[in-house]
Length: 110
Image (cartoon, rainbow, N blue to C red; front, top):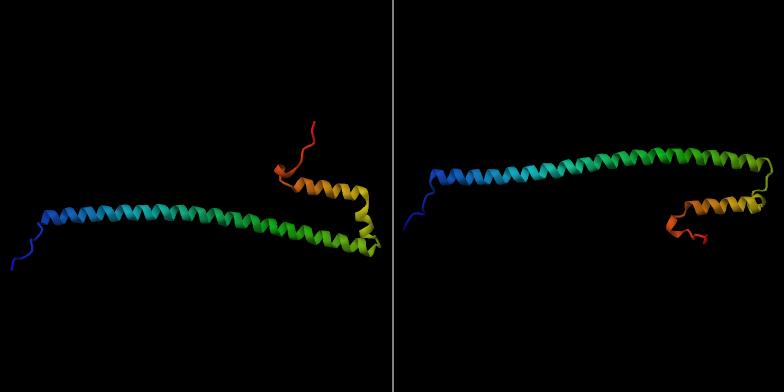
């Protein structure tokens, strides 16, 4: 039986350097990807904070609107009749139109 050839110390050192360089490159790529994900997470957290602040403002506005409605009801105002008034209907239609995307708004010919 013949013994398998033994690699020289120089060959082993070169192989170790090659593997080390490959591992360092993989580590650097992983760290870069992690940095990108951390930046995306920070951006997402900022967006969540902004949305939460908007939600607080909307809830406060809704609470104010509820108080106003209760006051009008207690004052005996017929809200159904009020909503049928032509000026109120025009304002509501304008509000709906303003909330539509511009691509859906029909333009009148000039």
